[in-house]
Image 1 (cartoon, rainbow, N blue to C red):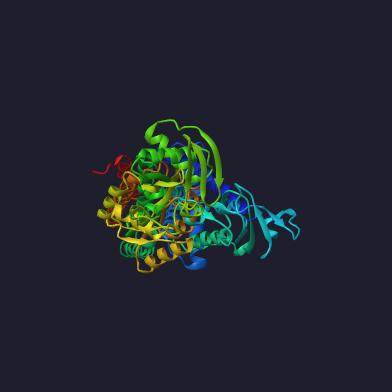
Image 2: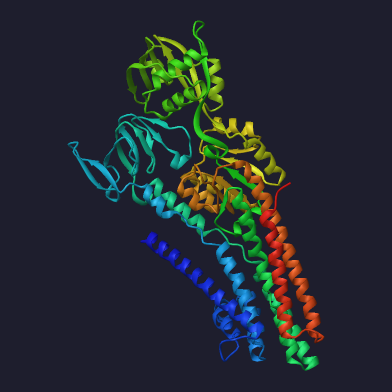
Length: 627
């Protein structure tokens, strides 16, 4: 039901924006007719702009004042509108209404509501589960009916419906949804499994331990919701200064009327003091910056995210798929026999794994073919050994490829026995595959997730932009430390659950740090919501991570992140310049209005020219390039 309501709200929001655009077009045409003196009606055409654009502004200002005594920029605009109408300056009132409506529309388009992706998270939980009774008979029931202690059967390729403990069977579980780990994890009887994770192969039976709202995937949903609710939105600078602007404008208008006795001068002050250019200063710069960012592969979903990004002091990274490619690759093939080369060990292992369904086996075969371009010898026999490895006959050799337990089972190695060269790779967080040929330990392969080509230079550039990189990963300590050392990241937090990532980001924010989170997995969604700015990898990232983020990196080119940060800083400089110019112009115009040099109509045109110059200055951001 919540998902349906969210969807209806989104459709309603789109309809409202279309309606605002139509109203603005009609009102703009009406103001032009009023300026040229031509009107097909018996009244001034600017009245149409007042009706379509002015009345909503006045109503919003009244509601804000009455309900929360909230003095925003629209209060001064309303005063200027009413004063202009009372004194018969209809064009001035219509022109002010159109400019303010344009600013409001730009903000609606740029500071759009981010889609939470909650409905997609819900879809990760299977709707049904296989319950086994005391006689072993299967019954398919809705997953919400599973109770603690129920015996559940999971088939190959299925998503696990509830948290539990494996009772029998061996398999490999893709836990990326919860931990972000690139490597699948082998599981056997006694091991815990989480809802939302995927059974790669091999059926197993489990006992349900946490169901319904207590399950891992439901906790993830609540984390995303709570993180989103706690994220503050940036208040427009014009609204922050509105109270002082209103006081100064009213005081200046009242004193001018008191000392000169000319109400027309007071009205002119209110018209020129109306903060149109001030209101346009931010959204026009944001729109131009978004246009520039799009050219570099960024989809900016929340306009005010660029404002936050300009002040970021901590930039936290998930490891897998963000700083790394997220795919295990063979980084070493080593022979341990004098009559066998490293290439021979690599070839024998790949030949044995070519029929394997295990992700690591597939990675070995893919790496071998990519590196050598040589076709593999045919596999004469093949046996999958779940939780341990494979056995195959290829090239006339009997080949075992798998983990240490497999080697111990076949009396090839003593349980727990390793060698110095293997230890080097194990300490770096690599996964080691042992290779036995004709009953002898012949060598090993080391697989690891490798850093992206430009990750190191990107980290260095971000540090120069005053953003300190931090690694937040679900991977184990060795893998995290190895990657961090190669990329020169000084602060590392490994083994992080989604809750841990939230806590770390919250702790930085408590220390007044502005935090940006970069991630790609479902497990990163709560952190992407919690951070001041969330950036998701749009190409390889999950839909849920992209929905949770403020910005998506469409082509996954992380080397563009420093450009986006530099662009955001440039955008903030443009906004400050726009605001300084608009306020200066307003004060000059007030001085001229007090002396009677400016009339309301000329004042409206002057203040309109200021708005045009602000828009022109913002437009320069469209083609800005980083030196």
